[in-house]
Length: 558
Image (cartoon, rainbow, N blue to C red):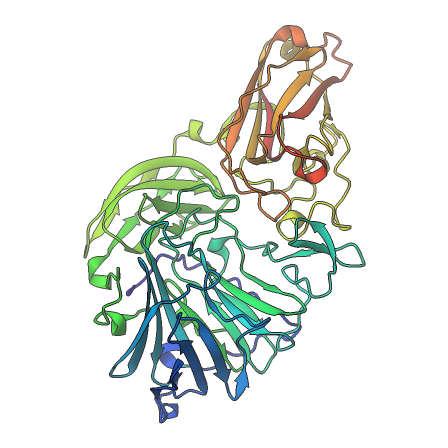
């Protein structure tokens, strides 16, 4: 793909995997010096196509299956561990692999059934550009993994389990001897938060710069694998489709370019980032599914009213074929989303991660679809409702609740987690911080909330709301108010895979409402009413894999 892509300007999170701080970015991407390209070219060693970029980077691609079998930068081999190569998914098998040079670009094309994969090199650049076109479900292509030799990049980050030999859950969550947990799932980051992922020693950096994810699924707040490191070696991922805690159907078509980039120890060049990367040089290469900048459009909005300016707002576009997003300007809500494929999209305005407005927008190639000011009705934001009391903020996230921040990079059993049990008293001033971000049937079901009502409040019926962001094994809240017991609510649609234990609360936001009659309240205004919240489900196993749910907010409406 070429032209400006869909990433918002605010994505500036850099992920480093060593104690060395990133220095100034080394030459990378389109800004690399052309003087270093004297040896640019390719050869055939019989089993591989060997490409020299002329920038101290030589890589090999298998002529048999399209695996990346060698990645040598400044004389050091980085590729491979455990006898495995870098490749789409776990390797494609026998494929048709061809190579062609067009001026200062070399393109290797891999055809495997209906799947097409591409590697491109540019003269004088220490990068490898990759595209993957998955046309249907006949090929299980959900990722590209760059496998990196052990010992080249040392780290002890949350997504590393080099020093964590004890298995906590399944075969992919581990515990160190000090009780801290590690897993390749624990990235901390949402897709909207980062432009690249990798490691750096201070003298060399190896990165994957992600694509615009227009053919991925899950939206801007989705979390998936980014990297891992174990005793065997490390892996950097570009996830093309990831089914764990997934909220959308799989999309098909060309995804990319995503870039394997080397630097002299700094961050990759911002010219490679989605949103700034241009690839007009690829327009005529014949990449299957490629749409140049001229075949794309833009959506721009002059502003958004009805916002709560205490929170960031994101505008997303999505249909069955593609997804995009951009940040709304904090001052007035202005937004611009470029590089959009033609079509009709659902436009969603998110307050933090909570959808508060939707409409439809049509995009035409070569033009900008300009939108008048979007007005968010007050009733669309549940945080605007008058409440007797409220725990948490309506943001579509468990932010502020006990252990919420830790849970994006640790297992619930982690030694750093505060106790998952404990009750809450309204008026204490610490209601949200004391209330657990997650509730499980087998861990802390039966949490109690104590509150008092005035005589006027106790004389009326009230609506109780519990907002959730995801659920595991159909876990949902049933409430008891004093002696009044609610019906068991039906489970909303949620992902069926693990979520709460693998660093993600992102499912489908849903609000449970309970009509509590006036007869449920205590008539003595000096006494505390007691709300009990139980998790009910006939599914799940035990402990942290019992049925559970993540909390967005809880309130009793006035």
